[in-house]
Image 1 (cartoon, helix red, strand yellow):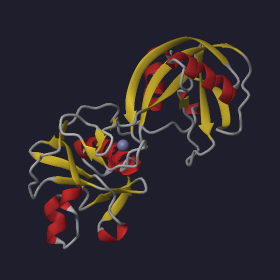
Image 2 (cartoon, protein in one colour):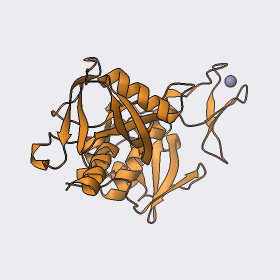
Image 3 (cartoon, protein in one colour):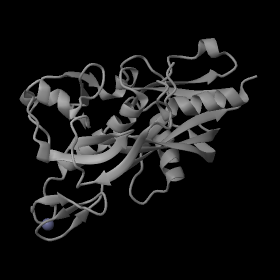
Length: 280
Ligand SMILES: [Zn+2]
């Protein structure tokens, strides 16, 4: 299994609106949760030029570097007809791209989604421009400044002695069982959000909520905040809206665990950490 959880790579974030484009700089272009690739990597500007693929060079934003190559994403989406490259699902592209390219790609996806959905000012409909000194957009008409959207999402591994609660999301494609998660509501702190989500989705009360780790999860703009929490009371009662099944699993019988989430997810990280620490 690929372990990419929060791994450090050669990708370095740098906001640089005045970056001078070089022919070997990398282009991160997306369409419907897929990233365009050229010979198993993201294309360089030169790859597009050589293959007569049109690209509006003025429509690019530099967001970092991988070694000597600058990384660009599009400020506005390109029509699909302009692109003649292969595409792969961003969520599974870690098995094709280099670790640095994958890290850059997920950030580029987050930024591209934000730029694409904030072309105009929400207050006066004026044009938004990328700011020079910080990663923000500013309205040319009323000067309203907008920062990248980050949606906090709590995720928790619930345990009861040596058993862990694993749940299958209704939208799960491959019969995957993972941790309970959900978005934080305005007015909630993170612990309250997790307790509410767990009660809503599986009918359990929890306590001893402890922070473990966090992860950028740009599908399109989440920040996952991971916890462990101890079972307090209640019987499993799945909501059948977001969760289709949930059960307790004994961590001392690893062969009886269901299909777990991929190694790039915070869910899998929480499960692995708990099992490593407490299995007999
Ligand atoms: Zn405005």
